Image 1 (tube, rainbow, N blue to C red):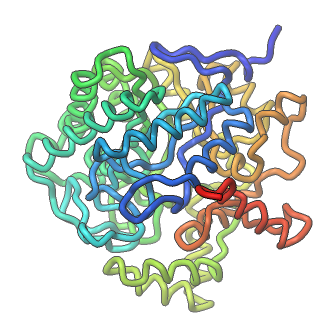
Image 2 (image 1 turned 90 degrees about the horizontal axis):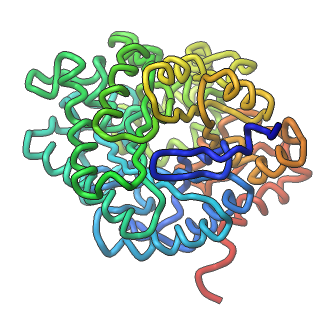
Length: 441
């Protein structure tokens, strides 16, 4: 009997060679205007060479106003197609599929760009953590963004990519419509669950109208939002429950979605996503300077992080709202199992996976059909090859320290946990390897 980890995963329109997917993660590797670079191609091919069956791209904006930060490649115009075609071809050389994540940040962002200092959302309320301001979307705005998602899918298909994922999780625009804690609209896009789901269902139908039924389309959703887990959201509601999300997933499948990708948390970052073993507030106090003038709360946050007393209070509150480090791996499996019971399409689960036996048991128990991995693959790009060689866990596993994500606003994305390397120089060599090969000799 073969190893379930290496059995092909069959979607309606796509076959993936194994059950390990690289989840959406990337750094500021592109040009300010959203054109792509060789560095991003280098980044993605690292994981394709490492053996994953498929890669889900990082956050790819379908509209310039949906950017979360400059220097992320976009898909909002036809002149972006050649870059994504080149990236897809590079990944395909390693028998790896590439799924582009169609995204829009809404009110949630890291660093606003020059063109659009204000975001868009289902609400006019600023986000509670950073205080990024936004405009409540009009019906005309909604129609424009729905069309932008459909055109993004068409461009991904024209680029020869293997499918698209709607980023409907972790506090971005689709979440802002779905969430009972965020969406305060009084029109047909707010109120009961069916109305809150209208926006994403219109996106799915528009994509199917534009690209047909034979192009892979999946949806990432925060099954349980835990919206009031944040220090600054205690006064808000908890947001959607897993049972509500299961109903949304049924509607999504009926509308034409081929798979569901299960996550958690109504924002990014969130204490449960990415759940961490600790929080380096001293490091955060330095990298957060990049955001200091971006939102109405960001300077307050910077002062909070710089003060030893308030910084320690924030750190403790953040960790207390998360999960025990021993429970990080597979923390979303219970929600994934509920979603899998509700739908008849494959379910992918994310949540700190890095142990072959844990993943194997989850799939064999019917909790999910595949897992997606981000941080442990950043730590060990060849983790899948290690699994194939019989290792249950990497010799130097991810510590869930989240230094990779604390660094990412200011520095290249990579593993910054020095204890995993023989020296600081070796760590920096690995981090900077993403810039090779260079775009010119």
